[in-house]
Structures are given as structure tokens and as C-alpha cells.
Length: 144
Image (cartoon, rainbow, N blue to C red; front, side, top):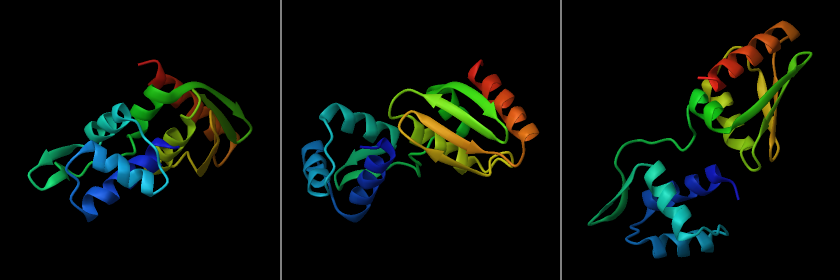
């Protein structure tokens, strides 16, 4: 299960009904076909900026489950290699989708689009020179 998919489901649930406990949240997620442990739900609740109120879990602030590009690069990127106008980005298992989503969401002109697998992101750049420039940019962010 993808973290982003689960977190979007959590946001949809807390926006549409009152959820007072993590057990209730877990049951509603199971009914939607998504399983999550209590530890995972606690982490998701924290990352989404949800707070427990008398009316149930609510958003404290508008928190997007997709990290900013630089945060995602620092957290998920392991290696970047250029091949013509393409970049192959290696991540840990199950980390390619959040990285691809963050790159797409950043709207960088160097990124035409992305395709994510489990541990690999294919980034399409306009040309080979831009791909190499983007590789250097990603590597510099990773080295911070």
C-alpha cells in the first residue's frame, strides 16, 4: 500500500465524518480496503497535522501528504543516473512514488514528467543537457 494513498484516504475520512479513535480510523480504512497498523496510523496522523478534538480528528492546518521536492529527495533518493534525456532515480523499496509525486508537484521546468515503480523513478527531461543538469541538482540536494 502506498503511503500517499493511505494518507489521502485518512484525510477523506476525517473530512467526511467524525472519527474519535485510531481504532475507528483503522476500521474505516479496512472497510475501504486499506490496512494499517496503529504505529503507522499514529505517524500518518502526525505527518498530516491532524489533532484530536471533541469532534474527532481534524486538520490543524492544511497539510499536504506529498513532501516538498527537496525534502523528498533528501529522504528517498539513493542514486541518480542520466541516460540521454532521462534520469533513473534509485530509492529504497516502496519509496519511488512519493519521490515522483514530489518532483511532479514541484513543477520544475527540468522535469517533463515522471514514472514511478517500487524503487525506481524514471524522470523525463526535455534534452540530455537538462537531464545532466537536473542530475547535478538532485545530487547537490542529496549531499546537503
